[in-house]
Image 1 (tube, rainbow, N blue to C red):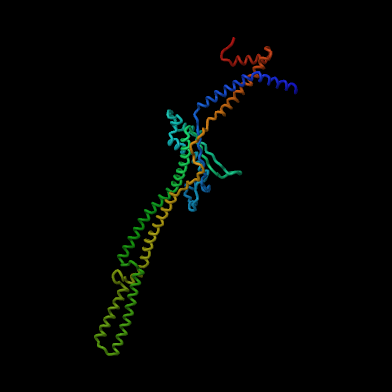
Image 2: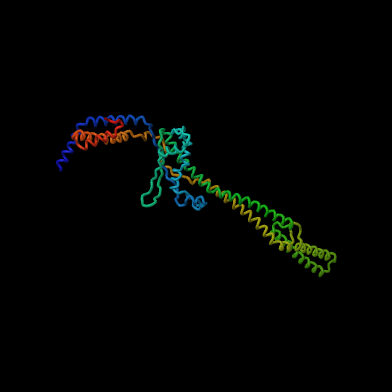
Amino acid sequence: MNDVKEVNLLDLMILLAKNKVKIILSGFIIAVLVFGGVSFMPKHYKSTTTFVPRGSGAPSFASLVGGAIAGDIINENPFSKRQYLEILNSRWLREEVIREFDLITYYKQDENTINPLDRTIRSLANDIIIGVEEEGGLGITDVLSISVSVSNTNPQMAADMANFIVKRMEDRIREIYANSFLGAIVFLDRQIEENTMKAFAASAALEEFQKENNIYNVQRQVDLSLSTYAANLAEISSTEKQIEALKLTQSSSSEITMLQNRIRYIRNQNEKIETKGFGNIFPGLNTVLSLTDEYTRLLLDARMYEQLQNLLIQQKIQTQIKIERDHSTIYLIDSARPAEWKYKPKRIKYCVIALVLWYLYLIPSIILKNMYENMPQNDETVQKIREFRKAMGFIKRK
């Protein structure tokens, strides 16, 4: 058995050696033709930009849209790193690139009146590669870096497209983050408007109450009234003692009468201070005490709405600051630049593929042809081969 195999193998080698010129020459012709044909194909250049996303990975888009901003307070990015990939692979971004660089014309879809945009998106998908560098390990791993590669016949256009994709991705992140706070801004504006009306009404009620009762600064007015009241009491006491001293010295009655009139005048003042008061400065103490509760309530309402207005305005300002804060920051490693060498087509690659396919056809055909010629013509296998060739032919043979 080993001898038979060796003879058969030698026969095969002899057969190939006899046809070596045909095999080599045909392969050379095929390689030259393929090499020349590929040379006329459009040359594509690839540019790549690489960046590291700053995503925290904790909150999801659902929690972000729901208004969860706890991470923002400690200056964390509410976007996960893998959400950057969702934006990069989104249809919206592809359409932005198509409009920016007029790719419908570039991919010659402008004559297609049915769905040129969809066909252009499909063609563009073959020229954009989103690469992800991940940590090693089992299960879900963290994203270390993301690369965006764009292939185009124009090297400058390829670089511009790659940089544009990253730029629009950052803009989209800013838009999504800002839109998540639109509800809060609308709510705060409505609250500020309602609170303004309530604060105006409370201030008007307090002002009206003060005008009607001559109460403006209770503590200050009461202090002045009490000081005046106490000073009058002290003067009355001093005057009474002076009258007693004059009586002991048997002074004239006119001087004593004058002092007594002074005492009555001062007592009338104190009586007014206790009841009606004197104008806007010295309100009546009894009136103040009876109106203190109402004044305190109105004053607290006015001050509360005033403080609430300040807090609402501060919250709106803080929310606007959060909207303006850039949460799309990425750490750019390499920006895209025009390539100096073409990316495709690879002429050697096409030549190798063509030669492999050609020899897969040529060598078996040589072997089968030799077997067919060396078989007896009356052999059953030869007869079946003839019938098969006749059946496969389009022209019937007689």
